[in-house]
Image (cartoon, rainbow, N blue to C red; front, side, top):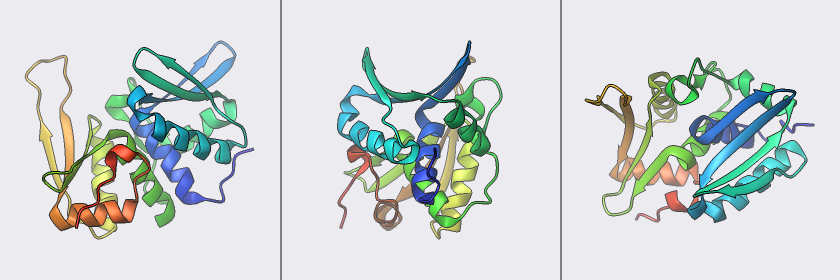
Length: 196
């Protein structure tokens, strides 16, 4: 049974999946996995607790090379994620929310989850960036941030090699970055900054 009572937590799970998740339907099983670096074990404990509260059962956990894999074999979770996210072909390249018609708690959680997965906070320059190769996803994040009163900058870098994808980057600087960190309250310790 999935628990939808905490919409911020639901958004956070969807955001993290958009950044660092994978799902597949293999034979008769439905797998949903989240991939973290082995350097993110403290964050992994938080994700396990978040997922356990949402799914009412503990996810499996294993390490492979330098990756920490957290996941479930769950048809219900597999289809639940696809109610919120869609993609064609390779997920990373085209993933996006099916729509932006969500309450503010969900959207705040979504940004937190995505930032915890594919965000960076530069402690020396008081700057945060959120990156991705899906234009649709990055433009949705840009729009959500504007809706929350931020003034993000949107950049892209076209790759010269044909096998590499264009990288899109959303940046907030100085006071905007500080306010973002306070507002989002990242769960990943690698993203937390205590700027003035």
